Image 1 (cartoon, rainbow, N blue to C red):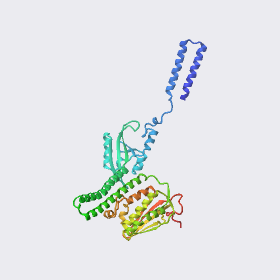
Image 2: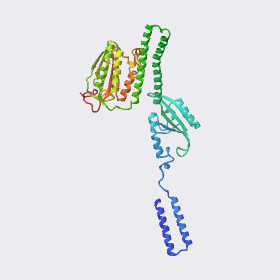
Image 3: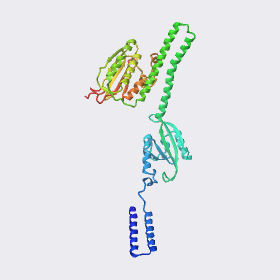
Image 4: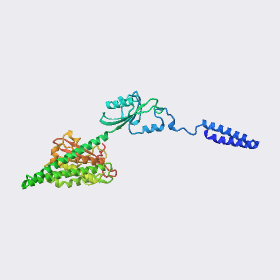
Length: 423
């Protein structure tokens, strides 16, 4: 209707002008008639809206003032609560509903997060209006570290006539764990390097003073120093290798290779080492077979680490076998290769921690054998990149079996090791 008013006014003005000309009205009377028409038109325009009312102005008295504002808040990835002065939750976005299983409309906030520090901070802000930030942890299925930012919304049409509290909750669990892992890693790496370094420095000082003229001591000490320096070098190499793997862990490899062929080549390269250590290394995988998408060098490193560990901890006289894994319903559409040994085995309580950095079942035995405590951590991160799994089975006195499972390539030939026939 409003868009026709200017057009109608123009027609009316034109009609009056034509009438004034036809009737030969005096100029003053014609001016008065035109002014009257203008005033009437202005009054009509003032009564009609100039255009559609913006969505933000509609429903201003709702809990969320506009469709845009509500959509924006509901799309926030962090939980958001609006709490009345009585402590009742008057609004919660979907992220809050996902993060707080006990969330109910109108529930008191203290029933949602029963942590004294959080309850006290929200209560204090509702009382004095000052903004606060509080960090706390909760325990449900697992421990979570959270940070809440608490403020007060001003009273008004947008959120109601009374001031209400607004609480934003951020999950800091991943950040806290990353900081803890980094701290533990630095502490462990420093400790692993400090021990051989202190040994080398001590023998250098001895050679400079008391054993300066003792050829036998000099040869013995130099051999120990060379062994400790080699240990430091292996540790640094493993640290660098782990760092490189982590940098590309999110990038899936594109090339296709035979997993059994890579395992056989890695084992064959260690045959001279096995002979020196008095270990029987049996390679029972065939070349070719099912193909997987992978980084050839990294997968070779996986089997090198596993076979080396089996020989190292199996000891002289042990038998280490590299075999293709039998089909398993727990690993459908996957191919597996197992490295098993006849060594002393591993107690059940240690198995789930074996892939942790620097974790050792026996620290002294591992160091004596030249282990860095990073070999299985490297295996885990490589398999993470390939979408694979490491399955560990062991029992004290009955040896151990480490099985690498990888998804078969879509274009791979042959039956996958994880494909169990029906019937």
